[in-house]
Structure formats: structure tokens, C-alpha cells
Image (tube, rainbow, N blue to C red; front, side, top):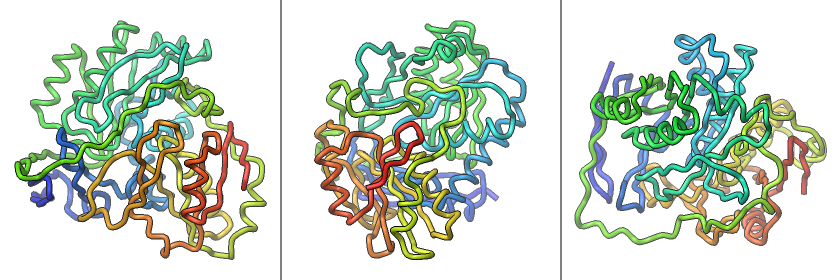
Length: 385
């Protein structure tokens, strides 16, 4: 059932050994070269809705699969935290959390890491060393009832799309343990886990806690860099300016302990804009992916064929899994390039940009460039323009 494969990229040679079937792997994962000397490759998920357009049913199936794996080993914790990792796994994190709520009817809280600085908000500081952008924040929850669970939880569930070393999680666990030394259990959920036994043991030794690893796909990898490839420096770090004025509503950055609000507002106005059975790309921005998924789910109820994707700051190279790229300035006022990959405009009857920020100049330019409709969501309320 397992298989091995070697992929030649401009940045080097990537060898993988996967424990599951090649068919399952090919259905869910592809490859790309990354403009990052720390890590010149990327496993491109076909079910994450980040670098690749994805049907809502595919996303939902991955949430359900991971939650089912979780429930086989965890059914009774009274104080449990789910943490989704920005930027790529924010929809995955929220999807897993809400699926877990549906299946268990238990109490738990959800938080996400973020690249955006919010002043006067205490945070647990850590880094993702191999990332193209290393600075992340895990903010302490704002509401008292949520923070009480955050400060005393016995179980921590960490959610990411792909894990290769476990170093980021080791850093996060140790930073969190300083705040909550009563933590007893850590469970890592991922679509793809490529940590070997040595890496997992290293995390356990470094954190002095047992870590359980659950994933849809698992295996090992080795990457040999191409010494002749010249990386071109790309600015990807946030500028550390406070983003509070841009962001309305909280979807996990400051902790939540319940379902997200149901979508209300101008959905009817949105639906009447499109031809029956239209093929629609619902595009989130940056970390704001899950609400694009929710909009796509609503549109499917009216027989539209929807796909979900998000913009990203990850600098990938054309070729392999990346067949097209739109480059633009980000709408979070970081003054850096953002990208939309594999969204070939002629494939869709319409595009909807779903956003959480103010309607910045950069966002307006993107919407016009894509000839897209735009939807702002604030605490579940849909505003259509």
C-alpha cells in the first residue's frame, strides 16, 4: 500500500515515502518549488483551498476524517483547546473545531495563530523557523470565560495542513506550557505528516510531554537542494503595525467557545446576480478562508457549482502544481506581494471575493482585476457589493 516517489524541482530533488496508497496521495497532494532558501519546496494540498481551488465537499470530508481520528482517542476532556495554524490551516482549524462541536456537543475553545499584530493584546510568542514568514502570534483570548479555559486546559489539539519537522509545534507547546503548566496531553492533527520517529522523539524530549500524531497521510521525506539555483529575496514579513482598524469581528484570533454566527444579511441579493448553475470561485483573503467556504456552501444550496480558494503570501515558482499566478498587493496593509495561484479566470462564470478588512485600495484593485463581486462578512453579517 505504501509507495515512494522522487520529484525534480528547480530548487532541488524531493524524495518521499508515503505509508498510504499512491492513489489517495495523488488525489490530495501535489508539489511546487518555493522561492525560499530555508525550504525550497511545498506540498500543495488539493483539499485545503489555499494554493489550489477546492470543492466544499472535499474540504468537509477532510474535516470529518480528522475529527473521526481524534474521537477514536479523545472523547472526554473537560478543558480542551483547538489551535489552527495561520495562514494556510485557518479554514482547516475552524472546520475541524465546528465538526467536533457537531459530533460531540462538548465544550471546547478554538484559537488560531496569526501574523497580524494587535496592540494591547497579550500573546504567547513563538516562531515557525522554516516558514517564509517566521513571525506569528497566539493571542490570549479576550473573553474571560474563554481565557479561563485557555489558561487551564488539560488537552491541546494543534491543527496544521502539513508537518515536516515538528519544530514549530515544539516551540508553541513550550511557550504555552509557561502559561499553563497543568497541560497533560497534546494531539497533533494534519492532512500530511512527514515527521520521522527521530523528529517526533525530539519534540517529546524538548517539550517533556507525550505528543500524539494523527493525519490523513503520513510518511517521510528528504530534500536535496540544487546549489545552482538562485533564490530571489521576496519581502514576506508583516510590518508589525497594529491591524485593529482593519479587522472587524473575531473568528478565532482572540479565542471563541461556540459556533461561528450563521451567515445573514444580503445573501439573496448575492444569489440573484448569477446565472442558474453558474460555476463560481469563492475567494478568501489571507487567513480569512473559512468564511469563503461557508459562502460556497450556501451557494451550493441554490445549485451553483462552487469552488473555494484563498490568496496567500507564499512565494511559489511557476511549474509543477502551479499553472497560473496573479500577483497583487495585500489588503492587510503589510505592503507586500500576495498571490492567487491556479485560478484560471476563464474556468469560472463568476468570482466572489470574501473579505474581513476595510475595503482598502489594494483590495479594490484586486476585485476590479478579477471582475469579481465582493462580500464583506462581519460577525456573520454579509454585505454584498
